[in-house]
Image 1: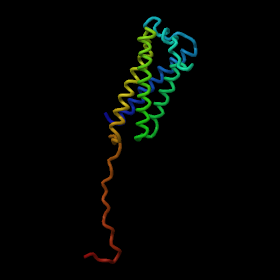
Image 2 (image 1 turned 90 degrees about the vertical axis):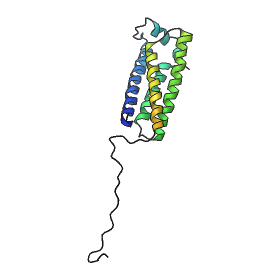
Image 3 (image 1 turned 135 degrees about the vertical axis):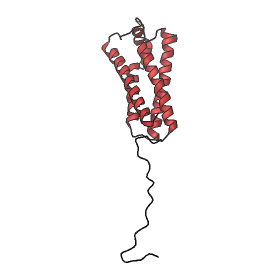
Image 4 (image 1 turned 180 degrees about the vertical axis):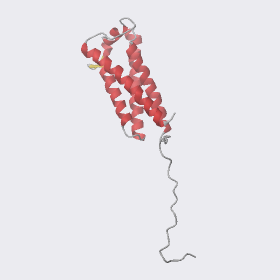
Length: 162
């Protein structure tokens, strides 16, 4: 996979995650039930005591996380921006793991929106680590480095070469 394709894949996954987190944040503040094919599981998770952290909705924390990841992906690509993406996705993955554990062992309900976000974050983390470890690799679209060898300087007019 080229560096360009990898970056586009990361951007696409981040935008999907941003959509999921935006929807869940909207649902929280609108006070409506989330669309859910698993009965009331999503509502149970969204209204549990674990749906807020220090009074801040977990969905909003996720939204801020995805915006941060998007910002790191849109920054000029260098080792620092790639590392920032890794750091953000590793934290997001850890937080998603914690929340999934709460769903399974504390709430005893699974929210399909939350699971989709956790899967997206897992993919983002894996791909961003791969991207970071690859380092600077020229893309296929980038021009090849110049192999121009300077020519011998021209002799002044009227001079002869031996």
